Amino acid sequence: MSRVALEKRQKLVLIVDDDPDMVKSLERLLSTNGFDYISFRSIEMFSRHQDFKSALCVLMDINLAGVSGLDVGRRLRQEGIFTPIIFMSGNDNSASRAAAAEVGSLAYLTKPFSCGPLIDLLEKTWNEQRPERLRLR
Image (cartoon, rainbow, N blue to C red; front, side, top):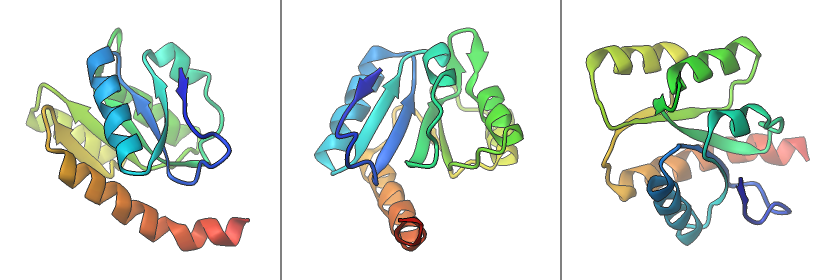
């Protein structure tokens, strides 16, 4: 698990992807644009994570080794964790898109995707959540 700037976690994105190159690219993109991150390269690592209140969102691959990111998203919702989820998939299909919408995803990105729209979405989410975060302090 990679950790960056844990003292200042207001713009924290949780990355869940088992592709090391994708994780590295996302880490670079996020840090360059002022976001902190914690990366999980397996569902086992992610399942041990407890602090979802500090996270802006979860950026999760749908096709993880041995498990569906969609199932993980459903489990989070069943456990009362409603941190926004952005699903990513290299195998786009209407069934996955529908399932992601059912889970209540913030967005569905097909790999490879453009960086600009992802950063715009994260900034928009940050700006919408910021007043709530300030009240919680």
